[in-house]
Amino acid sequence: MKNFSVKTIVATGIGAALFFVLGRFVAIPSGVPNTNISIQYGLLAFIAAVYGPVAGLLSGLIGHFLIDFSYGWGVWWSWVIASSFFGCAIGFLTRKYTLEDGEFSKHDAVGFNVGQAVAHLLAWVLVAPVLDIVMYAEPANKVFLQGLVSAGINILATGIVGTLLLFAYAAAKPKKGSLKKEK
Image (cartoon, rainbow, N blue to C red; front, side, top):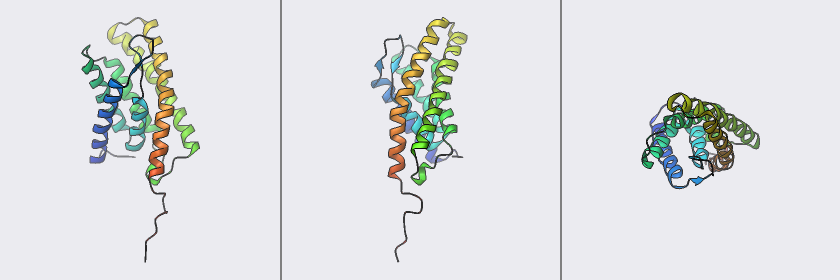
């Protein structure tokens, strides 16, 4: 299991900063109120897969907090918690991958995408709407619609961006046993 090291702390800071920039400045309105097409979840999945659940949780928490705070409407904690849940879940689901050894197969990509779809569905169709209702007394039909739209958009964005980042990262790493010592 990837531990909480200096490398993880640095990755968390970079992940949160990139999550913020992508979420704040590259968000495309979806047509559903307060719901955007966002590519930051692909990046969050990548950070969580490479550096573990702690980096995923904290990158999602800090990054989403900064997005909400920067808009000036206040922090929408139910969605901040859902983002951090997603990052943590992906960190746990991808523990078995050997990305550092330059390995990420098509089979791994399928498993990653099934896992990220389930994590998004849990985050956006369960965690965020239920917390919206409990914390903010939001109407159920509104928040479940937002959650379903967000889950669908995020699954697609993570499937594209996250998968490409993981393949690129693994390809950039030397394969285990591929380096030979010169005599």
